[in-house]
Length: 388
Image 1 (cartoon, rainbow, N blue to C red):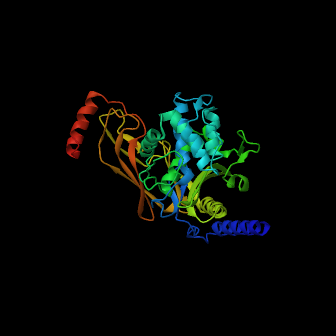
Image 2: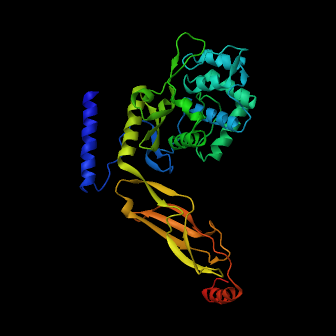
Image 3: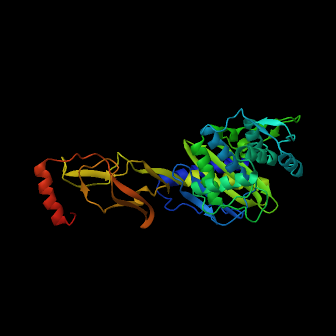
């Protein structure tokens, strides 16, 4: 371990030196990960930084439970569910716990269990019994809950995902992709930052003598990792959806179908280290960063600055900022009264000549309507310009 740490420090110092002296013109290729697929995304922008078959169909195994908890957190946020509410444990939930002895919370049939305990049983102990109990409490049955899961998946933009159960048991119609799971992890952290903290808890004790340990070993190995979920079945292999925050920046990785639990952790750390080392968040647009000034007609001012009202940042390879091009394209004449946010065209953002993002081009400030004479003159100007 000490030798590996020394090598890591040496490589980091060498790379910093190369960057400082302008000798690193092209970043290395992503790590070669021995898995079915993987995806590494930036939390703030959602940009895919690295991937291997990120849109290939795979089985999510117990990472399915991230969606189960996402729905529960949303119900809590909307006031339709509370941490102190109690769920009645059905025979189906209890029996599932017995049938999957390694993934259970040890619930008793007919007992009542608080929602917060079920959530910890799902997140920390990866309890299949807890997942079914929670799904039945929220939707009445696990099959009805699966319909909810698919509605949420569609809303979150998980285009290649379909769920049939709340815990991730093998089924040919239960599938997703590494990219979709990374997007789900991003949504979970973005939408429920306080509830998400449960994913960083190391252990959970319910009934049994010894507490169950969180199966995400990266919580112990790397202090920057604060979640999120492991998964394993014979068909799916060893899977890990993980998130790390370093120097205020968060990355999310999904490694799917590794051969061992130890390798899924190693591979996840390799991806996270790669992303933090070789990519940086670059703020490009926002209300204080106009990209152009265009004519304004029939207003108190004869021009208006345009850009985006919302900040736009991209995760770019280190040193690539100067190779970014932003080309505004005005498609609509700006005629007063003009409100901030009024769309007048698009902004094309390219890196090395390749289009990577397109954003609406909007007015950054208001332009009140001008006087009668101004409006009359500008009517003629617009006519000559072909705009009216």
